[in-house]
Length: 254
Image (cartoon, rainbow, N blue to C red):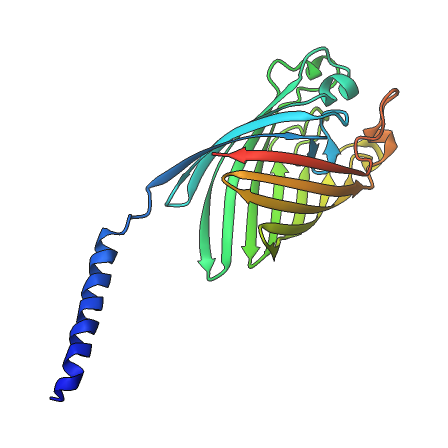
């Protein structure tokens, strides 16, 4: 053996041994994660339709995720549409409860299946139309930066009578601009069955610029528009809930 190469071999062997030791002591993937978030938005929009009659909203949630892909969570916000647009006496809070399962089909190709219920504690929308509480099942596929998602209600959809089977299909893409910036164009189509003249159906468009500041702090600005019809989404004294707008929001996750 060339004795000049022996020190190099010894050094290489030491590196291999050190790497093996590091691998053995590296922290294993956690079994689960639990996170919380609080935030504020200038105008809470759900599928580009105003939920707070164009006023600000305080929001917060909690999420639990298991490494198997299973997850559950809860989220809450103040709202105004049940009183302002339905004309009910009570119903100023939305509480969402959800759970599902995420997994990988192939490299850069994932799925997400779940159920979500939108609860409006104490709402009296049933005194005017039907109860506002709504449950949906959903499924999503993501390939690279593009996500397609389909949601369908299992009963009446947000205080609309005879609206079981209301559906929403959406398509979005998340472009990483670097420096914590993300640009997300989005288009969606909401259908609500058994409404006169299909007046509840609409298409919405949005463009979101998000910024991750680190340490759990993020912000977003959203430009949005819909073709929601006045006959369905406007009542005397209030504007069309789907009118175009620019909204801003800030969130802290911990």
